[in-house]
Length: 390
Image (cartoon, rainbow, N blue to C red; front, side):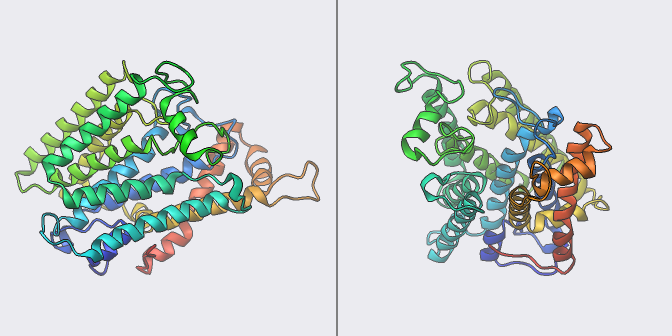
């Protein structure tokens, strides 16, 4: 779908997933699924009212997993796949160019800085500035996974992935939490909350101040989610009979779902803690879904419906930034001349949707509108083949 083949450094900068194959053999499914993921992020992050959200479009209150809880790990999984597809040609080379390492570090620092900017916008408060966030976690996962992919063998990546998940399980369920005296997995009193409070005290999620759903310690198993994506990229690139490849991937996905489900009896599936069971369970689903779309888009070439999501996927970070900034602006600007001084967001929701729809449909309608508003500039960029590099 794209006019030109990007260089390896441009691929790193844009999370594009070109491969050692020719342009005509490009993995369209990865671009497509990245677009679906970003569109879903915008949808679930922007309801008309947080009091009226259909259950699948909200996160689980604590333990458990909804459709919404699949979105972020899926994005990290896709980042892992893209790392393999972008860097496969240089993996294993004895002398890795410093320019490649610099590009990876630069990309990570830019993403982390953009996350800090979103946290600070529009009122800069350095004293209470939240350090971590969605883009910050993406930056750390990308940085670690890319370096591990370059320098480690595939076997070593398997070992590291398993070691991370087991270490995190031990730390969270067997080691007593300082100040608590026993291992605890409850909200705000677990080991991840303690570590984040020790390292990031005063700079965590504003709605809690005592723990962070994108905290530093829970980013460790999130790295494992990215590494499973890296491994999937290698599996999808294997030169074997297609039917064997597809059946093998579906089986691997099913095994991970089963392992995550079984592990959840001891270490509950929990997005905010990014538990090891959650990492396996969501990665298994990601493998199954990715394999299905790989078969549909890349093997069967059924692509008539793909362009809107390819548009989102081609400038994924840009559209996410636009959606977050727009949402903050709409909540910040208030109509001071109206009773109760509603924000623009509240006014549009109340008058444009809630006035004629039931609250849940009105809230969903507002979220869909935000997706469509963000889609307009991204579609223009896509049609003009403009891909903004960060």
